[in-house]
Image (cartoon, rainbow, N blue to C red; front, top):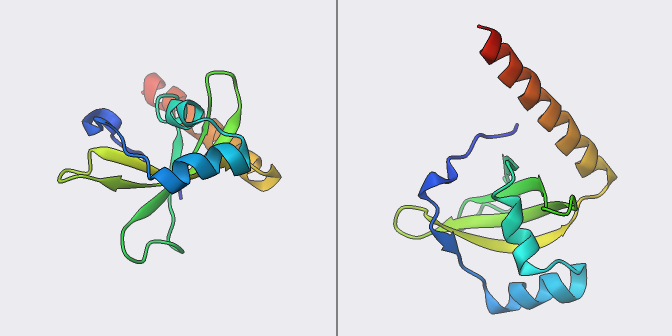
Amino acid sequence: MAKKFDFSKVVGFEWDKGNKEKNVLKHKVRNSETEEIFFNDPIIMPDRTHSVKEERYFAFGITDKKRQLIISFTLRGKNKEIIRPIISRDQNKKERTYYTDEKLKREVKRKNEKTK
């Protein structure tokens, strides 16, 4: 189930040193690419499997250069205003299908709301 997020309260990103390097070395994803996802209308989904100590989410999105990524992240700060990316990697085939389907549903919903 995709969730609509209000990113207007987000003031920045917090990078854990280990995750920051891991994403670049293991997945060839630059931190700037990861951050782009959140400015390009991502699809957000709760990560119920890993939400033990804190709530985690997945962001399915696209970079400015059209690279499709999935980001695991949590929100930090007193008002949940800081995005802390955990893992950032390319979407696999199943995830690309999910992302494409959700984007299509979102577009249909927007068009329907405009015609009301």
